[in-house]
Image (cartoon, rainbow, N blue to C red; front, top):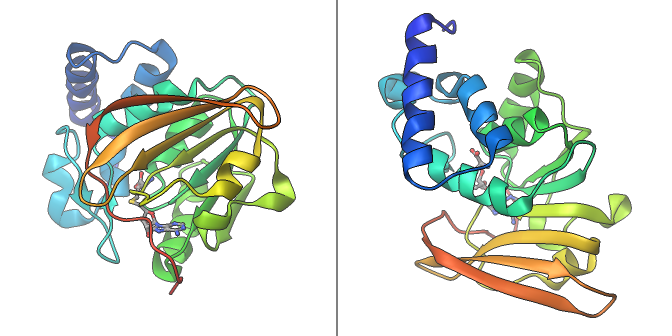
Length: 213
Ligand code: SAH
């Protein structure tokens, strides 16, 4: 499925919807205006690729709603060359947004099927994270720590301690916390043991799961 003028037009409309909903970061809007989201979706949902909604991907998971991707990325405040850890690779769409912003991205997925599919697909589109990891996001990725930013794209029942400890001083953790409904949380590391916490609105994510398969 190529990227056509029609797709580009639909993407620009999506960007306008995100602006209306309050997204301001130019680099984030530009990334969403550029990435062919329809390529990240299964054929049955192609017509909906530029609607501001989440949709099913493989393994009972979802590609996050564009507004959610934009909101989380804005909170992460990514600068070029920042080292970013993403928990929940899924379709790879959020990964692509981070790469468009010039970040060095490490991305973890716990479902083998998605890990295999996306680690093959993203480079074919020209998106190359530093590493795709098949593993458990609750543990983070200590061997590459510390990070400028960590983004969790599944609903966490609690804030995993390893993620806080793998942030640089000044680094940011963006994580939706809660069981059925999640509150978007931003933690900023102010010192070795000091964190500032900010809470934003309600979001709905698939759960961050333990025990990989
Ligand atoms: N960023 C993705 C969102 C996918 S949904 C996108 O843009 O498409 C959340 C993803 O988190 C799913 O792929 C799910 O398999 C994964 N996930 C759930 N629990 C996890 C864990 N403990 N570690 C890593 N990934 C996890």
